[in-house]
Amino acid sequence: MRLQRKRWQVRAMRKRRELTPVQDRTNQIRPGDVLLFCTFRNEEVRLHYFLQYYRNLGVNHFLFVDNDSSDGGREFAASQPDVSIWTTAASYKDARFGVDWLTWLQRRYGDKHWCLTVDPDEFFVYPFCDTRSVRALTDWLDSSNIRSFGAVMLDMYPKGPINDTPYERNTDPMDIAAWFDAGNYTISRNPRYRNLWIQGGPRARVFFPNQPKKAPALNKIPLVKWDKRFAYVSSTHMLLPRGLNLVYDDMGGEKASGALLHTKFLNTFAVKAQEELARGEHYAESDEYKAYVEGIKDNPDLWCKWSEKYINWRQLEILGIMSKGNWA
Image 1 (spheres, rainbow, N blue to C red):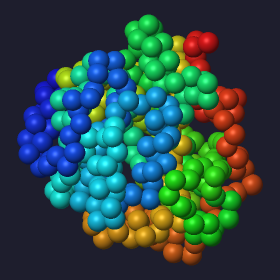
Image 2 (image 1 turned 180 degrees about the horizontal axis):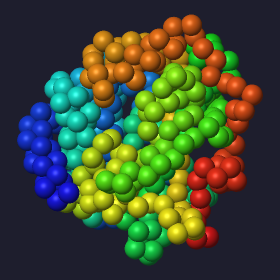
Image 3 (image 1 turned 135 degrees about the horizontal axis):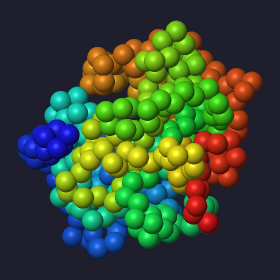
């Protein structure tokens, strides 16, 4: 495990050569700042609300890697006063799906900071997020000597066909994609890395109905008190050292946990899926995007009679999807 972690670090140091700074404001980062790391490509329409959402949570600085966008997203992000951004036209797949690029930035700028690593379509929800900033959460985690915080990725979707309601910049995507599966999840434990492995929801139900084991993983560890020796192994699904993956209680209790509201399924998804399938830059020869393109060709309705409309984090706690643990 140590050798593997060192290998990921060496890879990241090599991959830093692929990154060209567009706007570097990292001199603004102060001790104790909460940092957000994100890789994107052609997500300009999403970035406006994304930045607003995480600023409201209390994120102090954003560190972005733009993978050769052509829609103005790079320029928009570079114009924001709390954003540092690098760009690259190199292969997303060859950089371990962007993980190598972010590992370098986390090593360089994230050491001793709480770091939130998310995609532009993911919105972090945690206990008391409606009344307490993310700094309140990280202060409690520090006082409890906890260095990582887990979240289940909850696929959000509209009621009605995906393409029926257009998404517009500067608007909350949850106003459209307001529904989620309250059940329909399987959980197992990865014995090698000790992380949980969660699958299910609408992606398993609609896009992988006959091969649920091929459905995307929904377990994530997006919030970590970073150390330059750390490295993500696969997206934010698991880390090394593997003790960081123990974000659950296997003794019958509950640890505090959150959710990532995943707003992939907007009317922008069809074009995005076709583009990503053509690029062939995703995991397992882009099997996931092959399933998406096939599944959305008839403009499906992901809503079903068991769907729940999202209200707030307390609803997710009642449903057993997340927990406040002993944080009161």
